[in-house]
Length: 346
Ligand SMILES: [Zn+2]
Image (cartoon, rainbow, N blue to C red; front, side, top):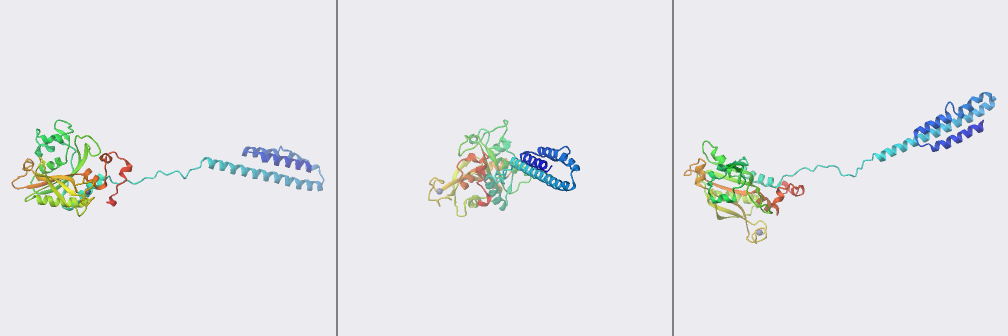
């Protein structure tokens, strides 16, 4: 009988080592220790033994049962651990993959320059005026001393929506709106920044879409020296406190006299370089004293009031400040380009 029990143990332990899953463990348990197993059969035969024999067989049978049970339990643990490891391997998260990090945006270089100009003029008591990008021919041209037949329109008349409405070619249309909407005419200082549109062949230095800041001051006893002082302040704010400016005679229909303004080169100290094309001076804006016809067209008595006006291209200033050589970079929304600018670095 003892021999039988040891044989059962041997067979069982051998089979258990071959078990691959939980179901085969359960099968083995019932096969070797269950009600219908050989082990149970042997146990049922114990009644015919003497007391001493019973004692001995009982001891061996307990050992066999314990050995089989232990082997089953250990193998089951082993199988479960293996299953867990397989599942972990399958569901593995690759923590070396880069996350979807969000980089905070930065201000557009044109916005940085526009705000810098706005800040300066607000500090000098100017209103900042905004208005529609589609405006009437009357506001864009006629009231600015540019009647329909005027040859100077050629450079500017561009994107007409109807015969009388167009994308504004300059922000001067806002100056007209500002002056004509004033019920009681009185002295004022204002700037109007914004987008403007003109027919142009787009290339590295030209665009059909660009931005301006125009300024207009109207009052009594306003003279050219007021204009000069204002523009000197602007040039020094934008390009450094040691800058000088010079006026060159020019022509605009809405100012008389009219000037182009150059700033002394900030790059070479006026020795001559690529930026100033060897001249020591860089052209930055146009300006002049407001034409009496413009004042009259907008309801101001030109015998009482004078004024000055100026217009500066924001792309031009930004390109000079940041060394941008391709104007199209401002409009193509390339993340790599836009992340070169940070207000703090100015
Ligand atoms: Zn230079």
